[in-house]
View (cartoon, rainbow, N blue to C red):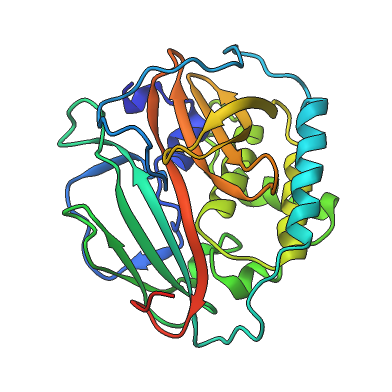
Length: 295
């Protein structure tokens, strides 16, 4: 699949790094990321893997989330409400996220290929006033300083203090998702629902937020048209689960959760042929005292 195959809303949101609001202090190299997903694969092969996906592709989605998706997201929201975040998080601390990842990349305008599965670690300043850090097992990202909060980023932020200010009501969170994601939608062929779902997925992958905000986010996701459920899936490290899924154009995204605990496991992406485009497996989240420190 080429970069041009992506529908316009995803052409922007799926192309950009999860932390688009964070300014890197080192210049970018020529490598172009088609989709910086945060996951690792259970399969050892680095080539795209053909799989059978249960939900059929189609150009038109249902006008609302399926009844099963609404129920599942309700259960996930209840579980999120009971999650415990570290007590007494300080502004001078960092949110740490460790993942196993495989990205679909295009080198020097060549064909997109799936990278080998590799480790990724991110340290994000709690309040965005301190430099973060990215450690990833790729030549471009082995040790990258992440800049401080950019005020030009507006409402889209992955910093804990900013996320703590998000709405805790379903309706208000729905409005926030659509308002903030709307700026990433191409004017020629807008897909506001796809943009909202993409922002929802990005938020749950590489950030930490208070339980009441997380719960509101899951309930708001149930208001996005086209959201459905697929069973008997695996994240890229082989953990089994159930997925909240949505299809846009030629891309299907699966956000995978543990079927018993409803904990978020990771993301997988497929093209219309059921071929893996990469994904994400979140292995750990914690709060630490400095960038580079591991829990």
